[in-house]
Length: 353
Image 1 (cartoon, rainbow, N blue to C red):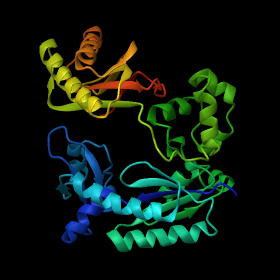
Image 2: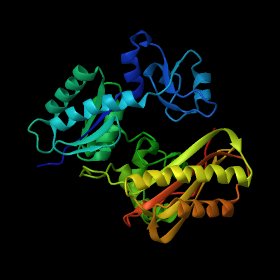
Image 3: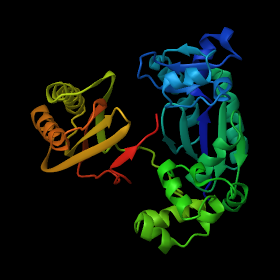
């Protein structure tokens, strides 16, 4: 049987759940977000997106772009309840499902006689049961399915072969493809690679020189829409973290250490609850200019003891010695069961406000 994978994504999930509870807001720009000075957008309705509002954008900026938007605080209990109904219907359609979050999943359709008809029925069932709309992409691998589901939102239904995906998106920038972020796209642009067609035709050896022996060929394969053809029905966690964005920037060793130990205590209690231990302890520090730095240390034996995690995290923070006030601080324990996390592409990122 040929590989046939679908990516199902509920349209503007959190905002859509809120609009079901507040039908009087339909047609108006809605932003789901907290209201603190450091709040970021969780999601936005399509009416708000027309103004340039997007997920993870600082809420203050979103409100400047769309001053008439209605701000709604997130209610994750309601989102989880809606997600459970959606995923029950998904699992009732196919046996093999890789759930990616509350609002999206990959489905293996290889065993179905009529994959398109099955997905159209599923979309109809989801809308009837929850009132939520979904977009669907179908292709021979996960990458194509994901890009296809994003192509015609909301209520999109796109089916593509690899050749069709290459032709349809040839003129699009590399950032269209999941996994290629802004910094990587900028480095590709320096090399004269500004479209997916150019990326697909690039010399893997050249990109290996600039991006490394693994990432260089991976980027070329991404441009050619070559991707995973199998699902991970259960995604095993290899790390767990806690982080906090402060309403007011903090500075000074004592205050930074106190916040770090608070996060380490929360993290270790969660690890102990699920009987998880790890060998890599890491910190994440975001300065007031949005420079983000990570530091990590791997120890000989796995741990979830707060005295060990907190001590190593504090040592990493002292070694880094933040040169500016800190807006975000995080602690992570990784390498559960000896499984290493994929290496980060960069250790330090300068992010725009």
